[in-house]
Length: 490
Image (cartoon, rainbow, N blue to C red):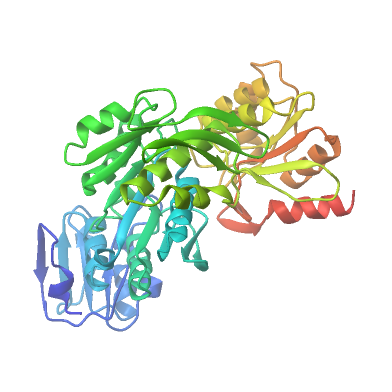
């Protein structure tokens, strides 16, 4: 594609050189550049792409995109190099990626789901209902990326970078997907990864404290305003009216027609007569002209909210009530309330809960049906992330779990002991029983050794992840395999 065609729709840029150049690929990683590539220099938190422009040119870049805010005097460019100057290279690469892949999101219906919690479960629920209705559905999110039942790639983040995202969309368009359901993280919205996407619907699950750090969001307003962007990109939306930010969302997203769902507050779709067991939740909700009972095999009040979000989308698309109920009936979400099968008659659950609120949700849910057994919780906190949530999670575990093993999650570049010390500040405020076991595998073993047949062991924080990230290296760590190995030797 010609460079001038790639620049379509980008505002405030200047070009020096040949706009007729034929671009074979777009790259933001200088090492991936090959002959005929366009290199886009992006300033990130850890690396500045402007420092690698010369390497990109040496590897075959025939044109470069630079951010006006960068120190351009330090970059040595060949006199005949074609240069594009832009006031935001992140916006530029997103729109160029759309153009390069021929704006693929125009060729299917795109449904975006954002919120602090529930994104993954809600997207899987929507996908399941749509597929029961006979549609071809793609999914992009935290666990993996799918076209129908086929996993096309594992995920390195909730929402891919713009180039990867548009390539995925292109494959889905070629495969003639009718719908694509995707998790849209606040970070992806803030960093313009989804700029240029044609969203048909947006879903807001909830909002609570998370992702506040130097590398994510500066404060809660920044976090909320990032999520708000999704509803500025979609003509129709659905929001949880029990969430305290719903009213503000509706007020600020003036051009989006938003309908609501709830358990407590008034809304367009309300769940009533809720029953929660240790393996499922069922409730009544109005489907068409009368109330219908819906059952989902994921326990907890939060499952009702996620189901309502999926039902809201389905009803807006005119999907039959029986199809909706079937789509929700037997759904399984990797790493969300995932029970680990075993022949020892022990209840061991893996869940992605990694914030104080999500940990409180899962512990409250399982505690309600565990008595007189014990709730044994294994958890830690990720390094290089919001430090304020560590004592909060400690306090939640100390208050709700009968016994907690405080251990390592993904320490990244921090020392595990320092993270655990932060958690311990919170758990000490309670009368909760706990033990520090830095090695997570050992912590899981001790939790299982402690458990009886009436108890529940909850492994919180890692969920679908099959690795542990330490100093930039991802080491294999699949809790399902670890539990199986421990039980085999028990």
